[in-house]
Amino acid sequence: MTSNLRANPDGLAGVGAALNRIADRLAHIVDEATVRTPLAAGNDEVSRRVAAKLVCAASDIEADLTGGARALREFAAIVQAQADALSAADATALTPLE
Image (tube, rainbow, N blue to C red; front, side, top):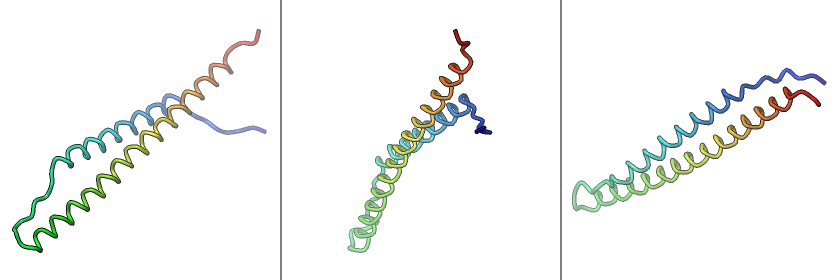
């Protein structure tokens, strides 16, 4: 059986590095966002509830971004492992038999 599979290990490694950079940016956004906590515009019940809802929403977004960054790093590691395996397979295939 023949295959038309073509892969570029260097290209895969570049994709893995790009995914890690995106994950770093997401982590930076989370770090910056956690510094800012919305304050109630006034001392009335509506203002306090709106501020509380914003804090809750921000917390949910922070959790999603953190999870997304973690998933990107995991995917980047998988892509890098595939690039390494392809490079090793190429090196083995190109090694002359003794």
